[in-house]
Length: 74
Image (cartoon, rainbow, N blue to C red; front, side):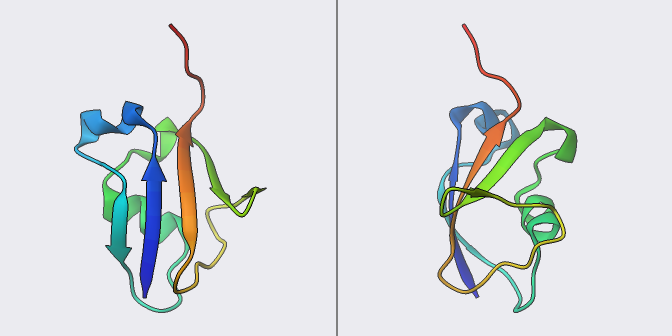
């Protein structure tokens, strides 16, 4: 299945950028995070359709998710 992922620029330090990701059917948020190579401790929220997702929630073909770090500042 294909998921569109939008990530905050913070995650570019891990070589991760927004785009499409192929995952097996039945993949969860945790699977997505592992595939992207982002340390789970760095992730504050994964959002789909204005809903915060848990790591155990299943993703679906065509989903669009936003991944944000815990805190941003300047």
